[in-house]
Length: 134
View 1 (cartoon, rainbow, N blue to C red):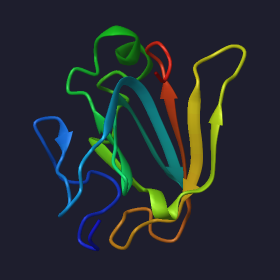
View 2: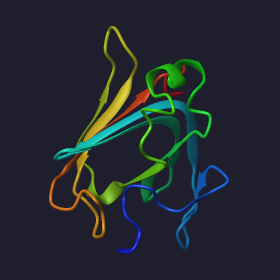
View 3: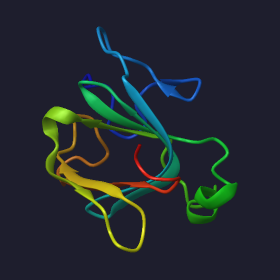
View 4: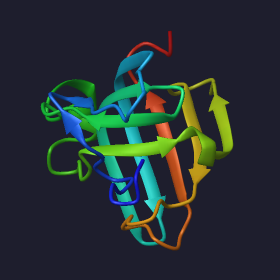
């Protein structure tokens, strides 16, 4: 991502992230709950994950007010349209399989230049709410 594109709300079109030059998304998964915190800033929404060899991009669903994700992260609670997690900056990433609850991917990322999270690490969680990861 360029320094003019913050981590929160990277460029999207038609509900999908806009690829960077030479980038191709190789996987997508629907039915995720995304949460992140950086200092006093908190982000949360339900939506879809996109994976490329460069980054994970979470894109919130426009219809986040329906279904399980709508119950968890309804329109009044969703406060991020998309979030960019560059793979090269991921730290302490972990895939968790709790006995009770949904499988989830957690980690920490430093803020990108221009991010509203400037100065504080971002602790994030992608929770697979809709039938697992496969």
